[in-house]
Length: 312
Image (cartoon, rainbow, N blue to C red; front, side, top):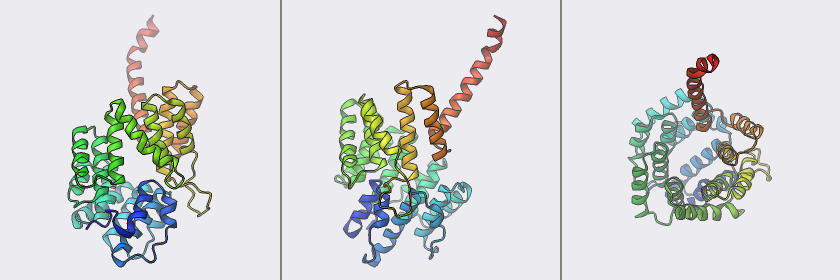
């Protein structure tokens, strides 16, 4: 059985993680978990630490001979900017332990994040009922604009995981990407339910709700949700006032807030301030890379016409 299937005592831990409630994952007492679930629970807690910006502590974990722990440590290396080392570790584990659920998810994430798309999909394709592998595969297909493959992945998974939160989320990602308007509304309901309840709210769910609001033309509501999400802290000190979201989730909120600022034609200084906040949170964010690439293309095109302008 897939240890990350969500059955039995792992259910609450998995639900909290998938909802972006990373602080709740760390706070949940797993001391009484059965021996078969102790390692999957530990892996989830380590992944929550990474999501909360505490990747360095994951590298000092004992018993690192376990492929599960090694896989999470590869993910931590990538989060710390040691991309070549992370790719090397992930590729090695993918070859040695391709059937391991933690290897599939953590190493698949590292490979996909570093443009090793075929390697990531090959590894994820070896899963046996691993819902996280389904969700990650869906995200990769959406990222590479392979909408038909994303649709097939979600449709196939719904036959055996209809009531899964992860599958509902994957279906919402697909709906937000493909439309039409009625599917935007369906995705909104999924995220609204998560975002409005204190026990499930997080920057991730708030951002999902806001994206649906943007697509539905409700820009004011979207701005409120994004401001709430992007103002969250990824404090790992254990302060009860800390928000649940991690640095990556907050970066996603900032990126969408920047997109919204452009849609709403907000002042240039507001957009520059948001860009600076995003750069500080995640200098490698895809939106920043895309903006830089488009800026270079514009400058190149403008240069072609500069002499004509000068001559006139």
